[in-house]
Length: 255
Image (cartoon, rainbow, N blue to C red; front, side, top):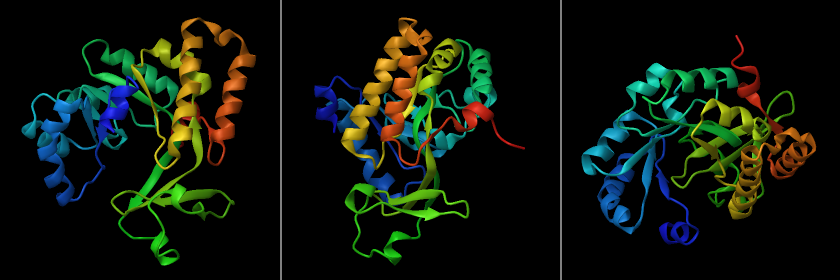
């Protein structure tokens, strides 16, 4: 993966599982140094204990905080920096809360990332849900016809396996904030996250291209033309799994 990233002028960040088994940690820690020598830019972890273990093994590697840290306010953000230099905010924050948090952090806190595209991960379980009906199925949605859990309203929550064999249940609709990029840029958000896990390289390439073009439009103040923005949103919807929603970003948490 590192050579592919290098060839594409992309900085590779190794995302660790939110709750990795001990054998994963035992095998992963010793290869941080050689991977760094090959061009690994950083590691994303989702709990402070993992960050501490990584930092003990390697003092130089950059640490990124994933969604699992549930960063909901500036106090949490400050408490996690160091060791994390960039934190993905909780996707349950509203746009107003994101702006307030970034403003409060100012230049003293870590850099902030916001999740802008993809199905939110609703649950991870060690129970092999798919194994009960597909004992020989593969590990991703690309390896077999898409399966999901249907709720009483008719919404389907996609189900797949991660590369550790655990069941993942995803939200029924994709979060899409492509029409909110000017707000995020004005708020001072450092980076945007697109979750393309289980979606394949075509999705990752095309969705990233849409957001790159949209960001270029923000820089040139082109978002005043709502027709162009609507075109981007339509393209995202065509690729999305289960439709699109601005979710908590637009409405916040419901009481």
